Image (cartoon, rainbow, N blue to C red; front, side, top):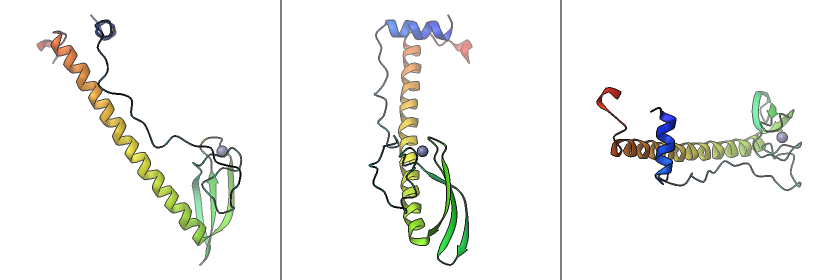
Length: 133
Ligand SMILES: [Zn+2]
Protein backbone atom coordinates (compact mmCIF):
# COMPACT_ATOMS: atom_id res chain seq x y z
CA UNK A 1 0.00 0.00 0.00
CA UNK A 2 1.49 3.33 -0.99
CA UNK A 3 0.90 6.63 0.81
CA UNK A 4 -1.84 7.70 -1.63
CA UNK A 5 -3.76 4.50 -0.86
CA UNK A 6 -3.36 5.15 2.86
CA UNK A 7 -4.64 8.69 2.37
CA UNK A 8 -7.70 7.54 0.41
CA UNK A 9 -8.38 4.80 2.96
CA UNK A 10 -8.21 7.28 5.81
CA UNK A 11 -10.62 9.64 4.06
CA UNK A 12 -13.08 6.78 3.42
CA UNK A 13 -13.04 6.11 7.14
CA UNK A 14 -14.54 9.56 7.59
CA UNK A 15 -11.63 11.04 9.50
CA UNK A 16 -11.40 14.79 9.44
CA UNK A 17 -8.32 16.99 9.66
CA UNK A 18 -7.34 18.28 13.10
CA UNK A 19 -8.60 21.82 12.69
CA UNK A 20 -9.76 24.47 10.29
CA UNK A 21 -7.25 26.17 8.05
CA UNK A 22 -6.17 29.25 10.03
CA UNK A 23 -7.40 32.71 9.15
CA UNK A 24 -4.40 34.73 8.02
CA UNK A 25 -3.64 38.43 8.52
CA UNK A 26 -1.80 39.05 5.30
CA UNK A 27 -4.51 38.84 2.71
CA UNK A 28 -4.11 41.95 0.59
CA UNK A 29 -6.93 44.43 0.70
CA UNK A 30 -7.75 46.92 -1.97
CA UNK A 31 -7.90 50.50 -0.83
CA UNK A 32 -10.08 53.47 -1.67
CA UNK A 33 -8.73 55.55 -4.57
CA UNK A 34 -8.09 58.56 -2.33
CA UNK A 35 -4.48 58.54 -1.30
CA UNK A 36 -1.63 60.77 -0.35
CA UNK A 37 1.72 61.09 -2.10
CA UNK A 38 3.18 59.84 1.16
CA UNK A 39 1.25 56.57 1.12
CA UNK A 40 4.29 54.73 -0.14
CA UNK A 41 2.81 51.33 0.65
CA UNK A 42 -0.04 51.85 -1.83
CA UNK A 43 0.36 50.92 -5.48
CA UNK A 44 -0.94 53.66 -7.80
CA UNK A 45 -1.45 51.08 -10.56
CA UNK A 46 -3.49 48.37 -8.83
CA UNK A 47 -4.28 49.68 -5.33
CA UNK A 48 -2.36 46.96 -3.51
CA UNK A 49 -1.12 47.87 -0.04
CA UNK A 50 1.94 45.64 -0.35
CA UNK A 51 4.39 47.98 -2.13
CA UNK A 52 7.96 47.37 -1.00
CA UNK A 53 11.19 49.36 -1.19
CA UNK A 54 13.79 47.77 -3.46
CA UNK A 55 16.55 50.42 -3.30
CA UNK A 56 17.14 53.54 -1.28
CA UNK A 57 19.83 56.17 -0.84
CA UNK A 58 20.01 59.40 1.14
CA UNK A 59 19.65 62.61 -0.86
CA UNK A 60 20.24 64.97 2.05
CA UNK A 61 19.57 65.08 5.79
CA UNK A 62 15.80 65.19 5.33
CA UNK A 63 15.04 63.05 2.28
CA UNK A 64 15.80 59.80 0.54
CA UNK A 65 15.55 58.58 -3.01
CA UNK A 66 13.59 55.33 -2.88
CA UNK A 67 12.66 52.83 -5.58
CA UNK A 68 9.41 51.05 -4.90
CA UNK A 69 7.88 47.95 -6.45
CA UNK A 70 4.46 46.35 -6.20
CA UNK A 71 4.66 42.56 -5.72
CA UNK A 72 1.18 42.10 -7.14
CA UNK A 73 1.31 43.94 -10.49
CA UNK A 74 5.08 44.49 -10.69
CA UNK A 75 4.65 48.24 -11.20
CA UNK A 76 7.65 50.22 -10.05
CA UNK A 77 8.28 53.83 -9.29
CA UNK A 78 10.98 55.96 -7.75
CA UNK A 79 10.98 59.28 -6.01
CA UNK A 80 12.46 61.48 -3.37
CA UNK A 81 10.56 61.23 -0.12
CA UNK A 82 10.76 63.04 3.20
CA UNK A 83 12.02 61.38 6.36
CA UNK A 84 8.56 61.59 8.05
CA UNK A 85 6.93 59.84 5.05
CA UNK A 86 9.60 57.14 5.19
CA UNK A 87 9.15 56.77 8.95
CA UNK A 88 5.43 56.11 8.38
CA UNK A 89 6.30 53.66 5.58
CA UNK A 90 8.80 51.91 7.88
CA UNK A 91 6.13 51.51 10.58
CA UNK A 92 3.75 50.01 8.01
CA UNK A 93 6.47 47.61 6.84
CA UNK A 94 7.15 46.62 10.46
CA UNK A 95 3.45 45.90 10.96
CA UNK A 96 3.53 43.78 7.80
CA UNK A 97 6.49 41.81 9.15
CA UNK A 98 4.62 41.19 12.42
CA UNK A 99 1.53 40.03 10.51
CA UNK A 100 3.65 37.68 8.35
CA UNK A 101 5.34 36.17 11.41
CA UNK A 102 1.95 35.72 13.08
CA UNK A 103 0.63 33.96 9.97
CA UNK A 104 3.75 31.81 9.78
CA UNK A 105 3.17 30.68 13.37
CA UNK A 106 -0.47 29.84 12.60
CA UNK A 107 0.51 27.85 9.50
CA UNK A 108 3.26 25.98 11.34
CA UNK A 109 0.82 25.03 14.09
CA UNK A 110 -1.82 23.96 11.57
CA UNK A 111 0.68 21.85 9.62
CA UNK A 112 2.01 20.25 12.81
CA UNK A 113 -1.51 19.42 14.01
CA UNK A 114 -2.29 17.85 10.65
CA UNK A 115 0.93 15.81 10.67
CA UNK A 116 0.23 14.60 14.22
CA UNK A 117 -3.32 13.64 13.23
CA UNK A 118 -2.07 11.70 10.17
CA UNK A 119 0.56 9.94 12.25
CA UNK A 120 -2.00 9.08 14.93
CA UNK A 121 -4.43 7.64 12.39
CA UNK A 122 -1.64 5.62 10.80
CA UNK A 123 -0.60 4.24 14.19
CA UNK A 124 -4.16 3.31 15.13
CA UNK A 125 -4.73 1.48 11.86
CA UNK A 126 -1.39 -0.41 11.98
CA UNK A 127 -0.11 1.35 8.86
CA UNK A 128 3.23 2.09 10.51
CA UNK A 129 5.42 -0.93 11.04
CA UNK A 130 8.85 -1.32 12.68
CA UNK A 131 10.43 -1.74 9.25
CA UNK A 132 9.24 1.77 8.33
CA UNK A 133 12.05 3.12 10.49
ZN1 LIG B 1 0.32 47.08 -8.04
